[in-house]
Length: 502
Image 1 (cartoon, rainbow, N blue to C red):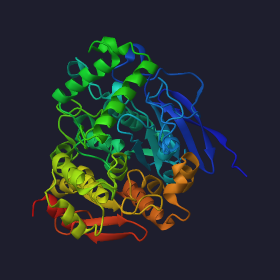
Image 2 (tube, one colour; image 1 turned 180 degrees about the vertical axis):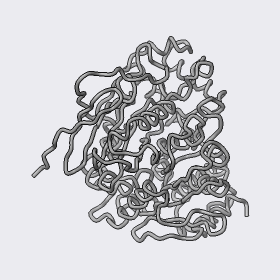
Image 3 (cartoon, one colour; image 1 turned 45 degrees about the vertical axis):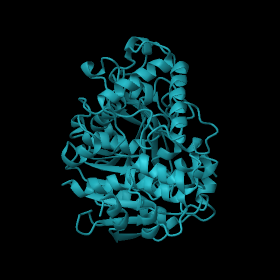
Image 4 (cartoon, one colour; image 1 turned 120 degrees about the vertical axis):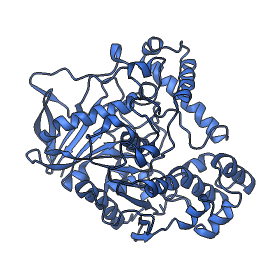
């Protein structure tokens, strides 16, 4: 029998909001933190919400930013929006106790390559964290066209990186309002996966984020995903060309939602076609943040090592096979050695003998597709994370998710996003929301793995320590999450030495 939901209320700076409480957890699915960023407000900084009288019902699922519909994607229902619209700057807040004071807060930023995804999808649900005493806040923000297009006057007007600036506005709202939901504004951890993890890197690198959070989690992020001003200016020209409009703020502001979605879809399709044919860099993206700007003066690595975020404790890691889905879509799983070797040499900059050394180090008997996945994963995610931890002064903790999904090819099982239901300790939402859920998890997914990974994230949010020693250049302690999870000393040594040229 379904648990009865009870209406509950909380008072924010703009007015009272009504959510639902079920089984001791209160959820407010679409609390506005800023006004709808369209009309005259399009391509402008997020503006305050107009205060309201009475009680505002926020029990409807938050709408997502405009994006190509992906109904044929087997992951769609788990990560993407059911609704899209203009009034998208909202938070999904989940709390274990509205009457509490001083609970730790986790602000979650969803992924999707800055093109897709939504903070109100099942993959961003906060129920399991609330059950463990954490106030969970998931952010919806502008992406792609509206969030990361550098317009002709963006730098002069301070409107560059609007997606990042939306996240900053959300974090400021949390500082002013989260106590009404039981949270402590002095105990905030910002966390994200994929593009959300990249966003956390941007926040750590941004001087505008100082004082807005105390800890950070970077789950499957790609530190090189950032553009220079000149690169962003070229992207702006491509956006205008795809829209059939002059390259001006005014011309793009008049695009309808449907027209904007078509522009994003066209650019994304062109990029994927170039990527899978080898004409685009494997570490690139259609949209990304722009460095050399007020909100993002330096890149992620610089920001974490010596910039604004160098003192903040971080938990960082990736899946063992982040790139396996891309390798599959490129048609390279069963490829011959020559195209694999060419891809490794030209696109990733690996040594000529990388494939043989990887097989000797950790991928014995692996085919070329598995090797390419390992190299791509290491060059874009794993090695940059290790390099950052090796050079920064602040505390850092490293992990790797290595579980072989029974629904994935051998040696390619720990794909990008496969770890999310384990981090959430919520298999049911994954199975219910996406056709691929049962395939990925299989009949008997390891509950102990979910307990270990989710527990580490909760502990880090609560205390700043995930349960193992910080990473240092002496012992390089790394948590490997697997069926039998364990803390290991320098498990990446052989691969690390390949990239270090030893």
